[in-house]
Length: 472
Image 1 (tube, rainbow, N blue to C red):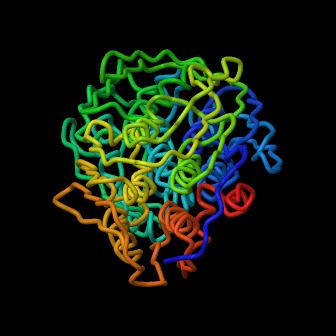
Image 2 (image 1 turned 30 degrees about the vertical axis):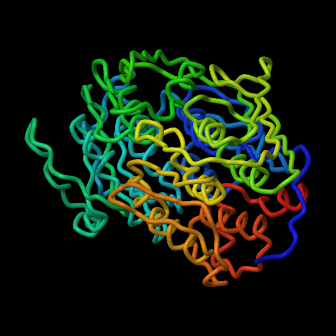
């Protein structure tokens, strides 16, 4: 069914963590002073965040090498983006709500993290900013963020609002107190920040680090204490990293809270490797006999390595070596080694586990094709609103590869066994994680595939193919 497949062997460092890179770029821009940063992920998505904060007034002096982007980020601090000091942080003399007539435009590319975190961060300043995205990002839902932010006092308007006020006429009237007008659900849109946000207690219907982070960032400039409660635990990078920048964050169970009026200060950061990127190489090693791969200096945050627990349940030989001297704030860092072991078995990934491995579902689904029995991923409907309808695309791709995959409601079922591929041409729908998953399938199954939009791997792992070659 394919060519002979040599094992993957060696030690490698994957690109820096994307989630932390976004946050370090944004928090450094929000902070007073100059942060020295090293190893920021040099990818399309992170460059979207860097471009946005630079356009808003942060000063960047960064140079790139094979380990990422390093240098300095000088934040706007108390001046605010464009000099808009939030009242909650001590500013005065600003309009309570910015007018869309003065909005500048920021490009978010394909990055949902850029867009959603900016929506939160800008909500507490007297600025108006238009956010745009590429065609894929422009279909992804923003109301999960803008609805709670609207309750705090920010406004979100359709992008065509600018045409109505471009002659300098008055902006649309703000809603009455307590009356929240449903904001637009997709980009492009205009965020009109408020210098008088009020804190809220928000119970999020979804476990989403982006939603939680956006509300917490707005809460830094709100009057009172803002609380976010999730149905399950999501990635906690924001609450672990903000204290390094001087903010007090409280966590109790599934509730995270911040009190307004807190100013961030500069902090020096070195970014560890991205576990989501590491997952592709580790799964490849788990699928090819006689393989042994070590990924060095990778982030070991428990909310990010749920995929390793799933791999262990399936029978993979995974070991961790924590480096106590390489921690970033409260984040753990270390090496992960995968040694091939035959006899993988199916497992069930429960709904409460999904937020901690949502980005790894595509590559875990590929692993499940080699595990005896049927692996079930419960309640993964969130995949429908990623860079593509990732849930449907996973099944489409696995079936094209001759594997057994179905969708039942919001559950994904993958049963072991393979037949000859039905197609050589595979669609990725411009989704970087699908492009990498299908490229791993090509490698471990010994196939010659025509994978569409393969350059999308640059969104998160620009040197993916070079690293895969180094291990071959």
